[in-house]
Every structure is written in structure tokens, then in C-alpha cells.
Length: 104
Image (tube, rainbow, N blue to C red):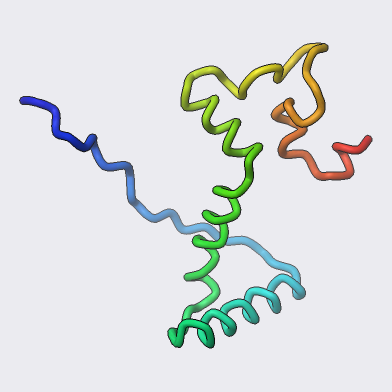
């Protein structure tokens, strides 16, 4: 059979995840949901908004995008990720470490 113009569709099975939010983040998420409802005239619950917020955040994180692109290309985590020539910010551990750990 000849291949179709589009490839096989990716896995679209939803995965249930949960997390704990501090009181300030919880208030901010509820306020965002309220603003969303006012802006678009359509109610949206916080759990419905969070996946879109996370997708937007991940799409806008350039360091994360570079690492993912390198992994998809089969080159590991990208250039200069280990050894003495690795610069701060290029090491995968630096990319995902808390900011205090990056500074020290």
C-alpha cells in the first residue's frame, strides 16, 4: 500500500495528572479563569485552562525547544552538554535546575 500524504496520527489519549498549588497560585488561576470568562463570554474552569497554559509556556521556552529539537534529531541533548567546554545554560541539568542552583 502506498503511504498517505499525512503520516500516522500521534497518540491523542488524554493522561490524567494532578498537582498541588499554593494558595497564591490557586487564587491567580481562579482569577485568570474569571478574566477568561469575562473576556470571551464563555465560562472556563481552571482544570480546562491549565493544559493550554502549560502548552503555551512550553512552546515559549527556547531552551526547552532546543533540547527537544536536538533529541528528535537523535543528537541527545544538544551541543556542548558535557565536559569542560560546556557553558552555563547549555548543560541539560542547568536548563532545568532551580535558579538558585544555577547561580552557585
